[in-house]
Image 1 (spheres, rainbow, N blue to C red):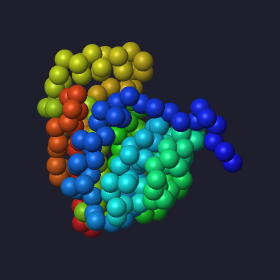
Image 2: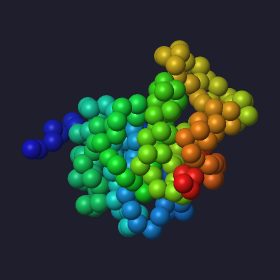
Image 3: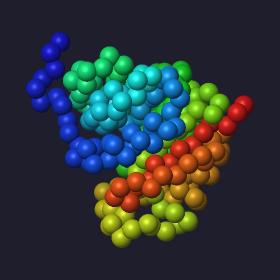
Image 4: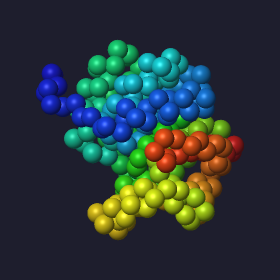
Length: 205
């Protein structure tokens, strides 16, 4: 079945952050294996990064069924056969995948209810082996404080749209959740536009 010409979606932020995220992935991913991306959105990250990660098979997913055509469309244009068909995954529901060697989630936990973050860590804990990475990208507060004025304005905007949303605090919210699910904090990378890439590791059983 041919994808409609308007199926491909584009997120301007992707072209600004993809190289910085890719450099972190190159340093923390295993030499080979399956990377599950939660909340793939447009699918542009998968299409851009997979060719640069020769041992990685990328499994994209999204909770929005209407996003899947864009993800698969970008995959077809990527020039690699190592991007699997996108899965419909809502983190709070059972995941239709039972194993991955890494999990990546960009720009989700602040634009969703806290239950989505809980589901992310619980689901990743079920499918990742010991020492495998769970990688988060996005804005975070540190020690209860915003790291930039732009993030204050962004947080206010998110909460105006939905009071369940907001920029999460890495130290007082995300790290305790990670520990409860069986993850330890491994690395924190400063990124463009006052964002962070945060790498957790699944604790050994």
